[in-house]
Amino acid sequence: MTPPVLEMKEISKRFPGVVALNAVELDVLMKILGGVYQPDSGHLRIDGREAAIRSVSDAIGRGIGFIHQELNVLDNLDVAGNVFLGREPVWGGPLRLIDRRKLHAQTSIYLERLDLDIPSHTPLRSLSIAQQQMVEIAKALSLNARILIMDEPTSSLTLTETARLLEVARELKAQGVSIIYISHRLGEISDLADRVVVLRDGRNAGVLAREEISHDRIVKLMVGRDLEHFYVHPATAGKPRYFEVRNLRTGRYPQHAVSFDVGQGEILGFAGLVGAGRSEVAQAIFGVDAALEGTVLLDGKPVKVPSPQDAIARGIYLIPEDRRQMGLVLEAAIRENITLPALSRYAAAGLIDRDAERKTASEMCAKLNIKAPSVEARAADLSGGNQQKVVLAKWLSLDPRVLIFDEPTRGIDVGAKAEIYQLMRRLAESGVAIIMISSDMEEILGESDRVAVMHEGAITGVLERQECSEEAIMKLAVGHKNPVAR
Image (cartoon, rainbow, N blue to C red; front, top):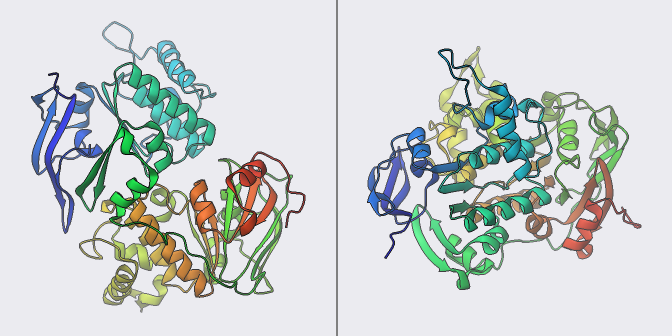
């Protein structure tokens, strides 16, 4: 009998105060298999033989490719430089100069394979997050790996890009490549997987064969129970038109004026394809990017938000799409991240009262169920779900009036999603107006009280809850106007 290409037995990994893995049998714990971390115990076999992977280069040498959940690209290089970083083709001779013509020709092969219509000379910094994610995928494909780990590969991709990636995954499988596909988008798992292994709290929670795979069965294994009350909606709405945006024009889509309102205690979903302009609207409201024109009213009164400091002073907060780059100081402690927006509250005579900081941070960690050894743990060492809770905690400690969530559960497991949804609903019930930008259709349909849909910088319609369906939203997302748009 031919041995499995990959076996992982009794794998355990501990960090200070946290058991990340407890005798896991298969999860391919990406960072252990990819050589980033070393297991504390357990066995790893490749082709039936005991193997030790001590570094990333060791993993690559064994034919293991890794598409990271968090972007792992260098924005000071061009696309080709990122795809073949450290593996650039060189001319013969003592100087070993990079063969740039060959470098770009080889890169173009992988860009074409992904239907990514950008030149290989394009600087990374000029690309969107979705395009940078596709470059990361092209880099992994260029390794010609025998085992390819895809960690949340579609979290920033458009529907078209996602469909193409799944098609590429099937092609690789047919060519004999073993794929480990890690995703919290359960529709993709159901569509692609031959077998599903579920982890919960660092342990194996169960395995499903192909014929057993279904959305409900995966969810039950992930959270340990049925999620009959995953999404909860209020019986009555709060004050209407509590937060209003009128004729807002952004630098990316100056030709379109955006107007909408959010009730007090309402969750207004913002749907649309990647690049529709939703994040630009959020950043203009929060003062990150200056709006070309527009008016913002809060509880009937005009407010000016030329900068994030002004937005914060008025209780308008943004939880950004890229929490690691824009929402957290990764090397700083949880305590420092939570108190950062209002350090003056913890200062006397120019000195920070760390005990007061710890008290607030500890209270918020308990309130949001943030799993960490202490408030002094680095934000970089937390899971994606706990990092998102830290970003949320810093704003909740300041009594928000308006909260903008940009992709609130991107890269977060189902259990953490349920907690985030409960927090959002509790905030709404306490009188906060919430704007939720999401590319997850299930999330939009399940969590929104109304849905505004954008296409190329314009709002093509606003749907009441009873009007919402995937078909209705997609029609608006591709540019069909709602004749009764509100």
